[in-house]
Length: 171
Image 1 (spheres, rainbow, N blue to C red):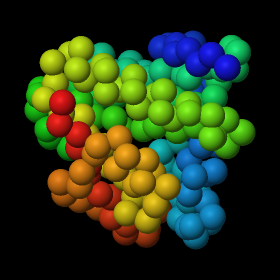
Image 2: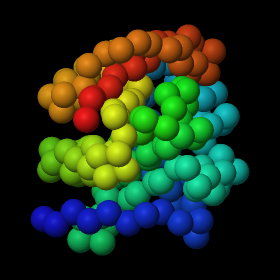
Image 3: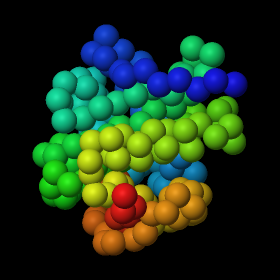
Image 4: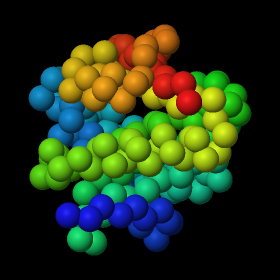
Protein backbone atom coordinates (compact mmCIF):
# COMPACT_ATOMS: atom_id res chain seq x y z
CA UNK A 1 0.00 0.00 0.00
CA UNK A 2 1.51 3.28 -1.12
CA UNK A 3 0.41 6.51 0.53
CA UNK A 4 0.80 9.75 -1.39
CA UNK A 5 -0.05 13.32 -0.50
CA UNK A 6 -1.85 15.81 -2.69
CA UNK A 7 -2.29 19.44 -1.76
CA UNK A 8 -6.00 20.25 -1.74
CA UNK A 9 -7.07 23.06 -4.07
CA UNK A 10 -10.21 25.16 -4.32
CA UNK A 11 -11.82 22.81 -6.85
CA UNK A 12 -11.83 20.13 -4.13
CA UNK A 13 -13.49 22.27 -1.43
CA UNK A 14 -16.70 20.22 -1.37
CA UNK A 15 -14.77 16.96 -1.15
CA UNK A 16 -12.69 18.36 1.72
CA UNK A 17 -15.80 19.61 3.51
CA UNK A 18 -17.42 16.17 3.32
CA UNK A 19 -14.21 14.55 4.59
CA UNK A 20 -13.94 17.04 7.47
CA UNK A 21 -17.52 16.32 8.54
CA UNK A 22 -17.20 12.56 8.28
CA UNK A 23 -13.90 12.27 10.13
CA UNK A 24 -14.99 14.67 12.88
CA UNK A 25 -18.23 12.81 13.52
CA UNK A 26 -16.48 9.43 13.35
CA UNK A 27 -13.92 10.61 15.90
CA UNK A 28 -16.16 12.38 18.40
CA UNK A 29 -19.88 11.56 18.03
CA UNK A 30 -19.80 8.55 20.37
CA UNK A 31 -18.40 10.64 23.26
CA UNK A 32 -20.48 13.78 22.81
CA UNK A 33 -24.11 14.89 22.93
CA UNK A 34 -25.64 14.87 19.42
CA UNK A 35 -27.14 18.32 20.03
CA UNK A 36 -23.67 19.80 20.66
CA UNK A 37 -22.21 17.93 17.68
CA UNK A 38 -24.93 19.25 15.36
CA UNK A 39 -24.61 22.83 16.62
CA UNK A 40 -20.85 22.73 16.09
CA UNK A 41 -21.23 21.20 12.63
CA UNK A 42 -23.70 23.85 11.49
CA UNK A 43 -21.33 26.61 12.57
CA UNK A 44 -18.01 25.18 11.40
CA UNK A 45 -18.62 22.80 8.51
CA UNK A 46 -19.63 25.26 5.80
CA UNK A 47 -18.38 25.63 2.26
CA UNK A 48 -17.51 29.26 3.04
CA UNK A 49 -15.22 28.24 5.92
CA UNK A 50 -13.64 25.51 3.82
CA UNK A 51 -12.94 27.90 0.93
CA UNK A 52 -11.50 30.46 3.36
CA UNK A 53 -9.14 27.84 4.81
CA UNK A 54 -8.03 26.72 1.35
CA UNK A 55 -7.50 30.35 0.32
CA UNK A 56 -5.26 31.23 3.27
CA UNK A 57 -1.68 31.46 1.97
CA UNK A 58 -0.35 30.58 5.44
CA UNK A 59 -2.22 27.26 5.62
CA UNK A 60 -1.62 24.04 3.72
CA UNK A 61 -4.09 21.17 3.51
CA UNK A 62 -3.20 17.79 2.02
CA UNK A 63 -5.22 14.71 1.18
CA UNK A 64 -3.62 11.36 2.01
CA UNK A 65 -4.30 9.06 -0.93
CA UNK A 66 -4.16 5.28 -0.98
CA UNK A 67 -4.41 3.93 -4.52
CA UNK A 68 -5.86 7.33 -5.55
CA UNK A 69 -8.60 7.09 -2.90
CA UNK A 70 -8.76 9.79 -0.22
CA UNK A 71 -7.92 8.16 3.11
CA UNK A 72 -7.48 11.22 5.32
CA UNK A 73 -6.07 14.71 5.51
CA UNK A 74 -3.76 17.03 7.37
CA UNK A 75 -3.90 20.81 7.88
CA UNK A 76 -0.78 22.84 8.69
CA UNK A 77 -0.75 26.49 9.78
CA UNK A 78 2.16 28.89 9.58
CA UNK A 79 2.64 32.32 11.16
CA UNK A 80 -0.62 34.25 11.65
CA UNK A 81 -2.79 31.33 10.49
CA UNK A 82 -2.03 29.49 13.73
CA UNK A 83 -5.04 29.19 16.03
CA UNK A 84 -2.93 30.29 19.01
CA UNK A 85 -0.19 32.94 18.67
CA UNK A 86 3.05 30.94 18.55
CA UNK A 87 4.99 33.15 16.15
CA UNK A 88 7.11 32.34 13.15
CA UNK A 89 9.25 29.78 14.98
CA UNK A 90 6.37 27.31 15.19
CA UNK A 91 4.23 25.23 12.85
CA UNK A 92 0.73 24.25 13.95
CA UNK A 93 -0.65 20.86 13.06
CA UNK A 94 -4.28 21.94 13.28
CA UNK A 95 -5.90 18.77 11.96
CA UNK A 96 -4.87 15.21 11.26
CA UNK A 97 -7.66 12.75 10.47
CA UNK A 98 -7.85 9.33 8.83
CA UNK A 99 -11.09 7.71 7.66
CA UNK A 100 -12.12 4.75 9.82
CA UNK A 101 -11.72 2.21 7.02
CA UNK A 102 -8.06 3.23 6.63
CA UNK A 103 -7.15 3.33 10.32
CA UNK A 104 -4.52 0.88 11.49
CA UNK A 105 -2.61 1.20 8.20
CA UNK A 106 -0.04 3.77 9.44
CA UNK A 107 -1.58 6.62 7.43
CA UNK A 108 -1.73 8.81 10.53
CA UNK A 109 1.97 8.12 11.09
CA UNK A 110 2.67 9.07 7.47
CA UNK A 111 0.76 12.35 7.87
CA UNK A 112 2.49 13.11 11.18
CA UNK A 113 5.93 12.39 9.73
CA UNK A 114 5.12 14.70 6.83
CA UNK A 115 4.09 17.49 9.21
CA UNK A 116 7.23 17.09 11.33
CA UNK A 117 9.45 17.06 8.24
CA UNK A 118 7.67 20.17 6.90
CA UNK A 119 8.41 21.95 10.18
CA UNK A 120 12.08 20.93 9.97
CA UNK A 121 12.35 21.95 6.29
CA UNK A 122 10.88 25.38 7.08
CA UNK A 123 13.31 25.88 10.00
CA UNK A 124 10.72 25.84 12.77
CA UNK A 125 11.86 25.32 16.37
CA UNK A 126 8.81 23.26 17.21
CA UNK A 127 5.56 21.81 15.92
CA UNK A 128 2.43 22.00 18.06
CA UNK A 129 -1.20 20.94 18.13
CA UNK A 130 -4.34 20.98 20.24
CA UNK A 131 -6.10 17.77 21.26
CA UNK A 132 -9.26 17.12 23.25
CA UNK A 133 -8.24 16.05 26.75
CA UNK A 134 -10.48 12.94 26.52
CA UNK A 135 -9.12 11.71 23.17
CA UNK A 136 -6.94 8.98 24.65
CA UNK A 137 -6.09 7.37 21.31
CA UNK A 138 -4.76 10.64 19.89
CA UNK A 139 -2.94 11.53 23.12
CA UNK A 140 -1.13 8.18 23.09
CA UNK A 141 -0.18 8.66 19.42
CA UNK A 142 1.15 12.18 20.00
CA UNK A 143 3.14 11.10 23.06
CA UNK A 144 4.65 8.26 21.00
CA UNK A 145 5.82 10.85 18.47
CA UNK A 146 7.57 12.93 21.16
CA UNK A 147 4.92 15.57 21.86
CA UNK A 148 4.56 16.95 25.41
CA UNK A 149 1.79 19.04 26.98
CA UNK A 150 2.63 22.74 27.34
CA UNK A 151 -0.75 24.28 28.06
CA UNK A 152 -4.45 24.14 27.34
CA UNK A 153 -7.23 26.19 25.83
CA UNK A 154 -11.02 26.08 25.83
CA UNK A 155 -12.90 24.43 22.98
CA UNK A 156 -16.60 25.01 22.51
CA UNK A 157 -18.55 22.12 21.00
CA UNK A 158 -21.96 23.65 20.45
CA UNK A 159 -22.67 25.02 23.92
CA UNK A 160 -20.50 22.41 25.68
CA UNK A 161 -17.32 23.93 27.11
CA UNK A 162 -14.47 21.46 26.65
CA UNK A 163 -10.72 21.59 27.15
CA UNK A 164 -8.00 20.97 24.58
CA UNK A 165 -4.47 20.20 25.66
CA UNK A 166 -1.74 22.00 23.75
CA UNK A 167 1.17 19.74 22.86
CA UNK A 168 4.47 20.45 21.17
CA UNK A 169 7.51 18.66 19.87
CA UNK A 170 10.84 20.47 19.84
CA UNK A 171 12.78 20.04 16.62
